[in-house]
Amino acid sequence: MSTTKRTDLDAIRDLVQPMTATASLYLGLEPSEPTGDTSEDLYLRWRAMAARLRAEGADERTLAAIGQHLADLRVYPTEVAVFAAAGELRMARSLPGGARYDLASFGAPARVGPLLAWLRGRPPHVIVAIDRTGADLVSAPRGALTGAERSVLGPDDEIERNAPGGWSQPRYQRRAEDSWQHNAAAVATAVVEELHRVRGDLVLVAGDVRATQLLRDRLARMEHGVDVRRMPGGRGADGSAANRPAAVAQLLDAYVAERTAAALAQLNEAAGPDGRAVQGLCPTLAALAAGQVETLLVADDPADTRPAWFGDHLWAAPSPGDRTALGHACRRGRMVDVAVRAGLLTGADVWILTAAEAAGLPDGIGGLRRYH
Image 1: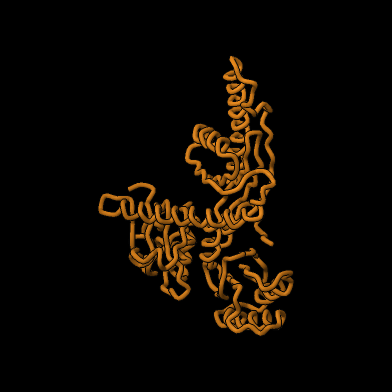
Image 2: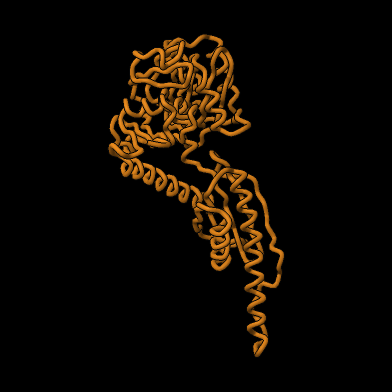
């Protein structure tokens, strides 16, 4: 359902760049007051969100564009993110598992924090079901739990070490081991190609233990920073395929939690007068204003309405005092959205944190600078 044809992050940058107000709507899976009638339920939910958007200044053409999109939904209940401005739909994205409750706002910048958080929870990855003859691959880009399928058949078919025995036994064993190595190399080459295509570093492997180890060794030599994780099951028809989606989801959750913890640990380690870290509202916005932030970490609490200001040259500030630095145009926005916009448009890696993850972060915001 997505209208984003390049990458999600490219489309999100385009979405937040304008200074003009955008209607941001997240339709959650759980209605606050379910009616039992799906069509009536959607109508009542949209009417409540439209009233909220209208009260914040949304025009009728923009509301009509969103309403038409919701009316055309083929699956309901479902979770979706919809953005519209000036009477046109600017982005619509299915968010399975990404929005529990409804959220609607009208303003600038567009409210993309929940969308970014959802994408962060679904990193790009390659699933590999391997044996000693080859492998079946599934390459999932960011935001997807499935993707393009590809099978790899290794160049060698002498994979058994069984032989009559005697003096020739070691020779048969060496041939089989060489075949495994060659086949693992072919699989590793295909995996690296798929990682580059989806722009990821995570590989989830199920299958033969020896083939998995050979693949792991090959990938370590071919590509720096590849994270290989083991899944239960095999390549053949052993019944494990039915349980694979749950195993993949569990591994992705663990991967994201570990990466988030590592980013927060790095932020704490780099704190201090001589470190790369900035923590707290004013220091972080100042670093964003200077385009210095490499990694931005910010909590996106729906109840957080703290303001910040931004201008037409990407800058962000905690107050509108320095209008020269902000550019000719200056707008007031929600602080979290202003910080996220500045991070996206200056090339920062933006991490949206939960309240629990940001518990020790002053003002719920911080970052790592590219240089000190």
